[in-house]
Image (cartoon, rainbow, N blue to C red):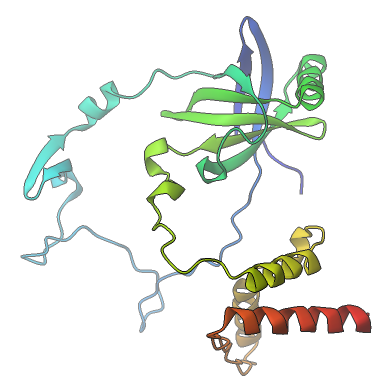
Amino acid sequence: MSARAIWKAKLKLNGTRIPVDLYSAVADRAVHFNILEEKTMTRVKQHMVDPESGKEVPADEIRKAYQVEPGTFVILNDDELDSLEPEPSREIEITHFVPPASVDAQMFERPYYLGPDGDQEAYFALAEALNSKGKEGIARWIMRKKEYSGVLRAEGDYLFLVTLRDPKQVVSAKDLPTHAGRDLDQKELKMATQLVEALEGDFDPTEFRDEYRDRVLEFIERKAKSKAPKLHVVRSKRATTSLESALDRSIKQLKKEKKAA
């Protein structure tokens, strides 16, 4: 299935503008269920209900509000919210370029591809320049009434754009509890290093699938044919109390598997 562009824009680098198409780089493959009424097997709808009276609240009586403190709300109407929206634009402005890995991974949110939309020479020249210089662009743009910031990078011959989270959403490692336990045991540290070395290898994304989703879809398919299978319980492994013994067992198992191979 060929990719379909979801938005058109122009990359802006000072006075240069390169027309591009935006494509989603991920696809939703989650299992979505319908909510049905048990007797009629028809879809049910959600309604806004007054929790005290239990009565449905008509749409024209519903207001948006922001709670500034417990029990105190600021009411906002549609006109007020519309006046606060950013000015629409079709430009993705590259403000500056930075070395790779300058942006922390927890800042990344959603990936997109940028494809050429007309001026292919300028598009592929930019992708090649990013590859040769080893740089990534910091971008800002407005799309569908929302402001975004992101990182522009080259993926092979194409451009790749990843949206960034608001910095206020990111939890810093500095906020984690500090290490207050015993000093590291050198024997355990050596064994942990051996375990890391024994597990070295290449990343193959096809090895990592949503097995729960696969089981659900397989069960649904078989149940639709009136052949509901027996489900096997997935048991969790019991935690070990000794890090050293756990590492030792892991290393021995890895050596055994490599020898057998």
